[in-house]
Image (cartoon, rainbow, N blue to C red; front, side, top):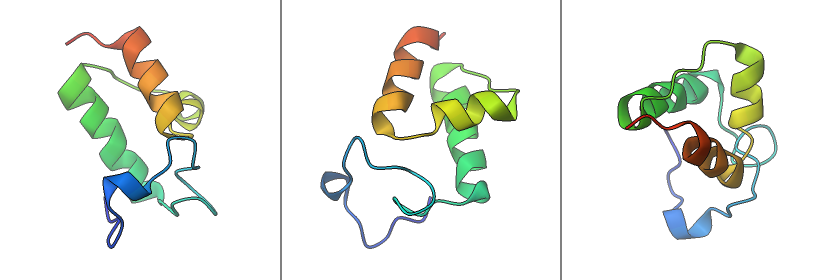
Length: 70
């Protein structure tokens, strides 16, 4: 993910990851999906599910807590 020059402390948990928020793009979403699989054993197959999960940090944390296998 290319978030330079941001530090983790500067990213709000409810800030949108895409669009006018952090401005992540489709490559970043693929990187996040790979990270979820590698770190938490979570596989996202459906693009609609991915759009629901990758809204902001809070949404991702909730999804990980409910679906992690590692």
